[in-house]
Image (tube, rainbow, N blue to C red; front, side, top):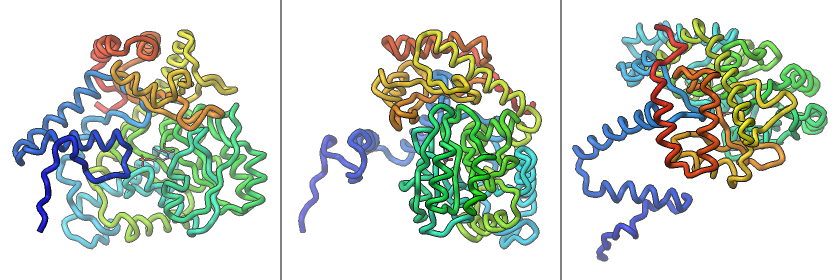
Length: 445
Ligand SMILES: *Cc1c(COP(=O)(O)O)cnc(C)c1O
């Protein structure tokens, strides 16, 4: 028998050699620091980290990442209200387990409210994430080996549509569509030609950065010529549709619309699939159960219902505020001579914008630079510049905390100083500014 030497801290590794070096070092450091901790210490540490997270996000920093948001406290409370651990297989009125009279009513209400907010006939709420919503959509429309056409990363196309994501894992034959950089969307002539050539089963549109509406009706017409379905991925744009700022893709001809529920929707982490087609709704229903979700999170479902009620009451005002502040922030950043990415429609017509971060080494490097300035953002692709060349900025959270267009010059100043000067002193100014905004808007009182 050989004895196993106890590793010294510097030798400690989690054995996950496939991770990037920075991640291996960070994981090892976390585990090393807690190597002697007993269960009580670990439990206390988790409590501390939960509190620390709230301080980071709700006191010290300003979240400029449109993929993240703050929830209505009532919706958040629903996540810890004894619902999430209850198994609930099957449909209301025909549940497999007993005692689900309350949960099945929550489930039906949540789906009905989602239909009302998005003007859809059918809503599937038993979806764990936006990525899974896309997998549901792929499974409902395609068989493994079928061809699909997707938007590339240079216009914010998402990994779930590509080989490394749900589309690739499901075995789809993926073709990226050429882009129309000026309109920050796909090139319709090129799409038409590609579609005629490969005869896809599905054409997807919608991205993680949406500066202008996508031409859904035109994509529908192309899809009709080749017998394809159209999926609109509204993971980010959903707030524009729920708030009536942009034409609803389901009205413009999309067969399916998927989304994340915690980005511009400001709800719980999860996904949503919407359609007006009964045949697709039936397939999605079977994919949800008994297909992929079996039991699902009823707490998240209740939180989604509360979120949808906020949208019905305040959605248009919320979306208007998101768009107005995004435009104002883009203008203020451009006034400070930051390279705000621009389209034929201007900097943005949505709640999102992007700064060309090439001079800071790319979007991720710019985001790392802004972290000590207590400004939270992340990278995004930009046409002709690279898949991580942009710094993406969005206004879903800041307007919920009460920032308005009048606050955007000051915020732009912090972003510019964070990028151009020593970011640490900027962090103190950011926190002082952040702490003026403590009351959530656009939620039901
Ligand atoms: C965020 C995102 C997704 C994935 O959603 P998750 O909820 O993170 O799984 C899918 N599509 C697009 C365009 C996204 O931006």
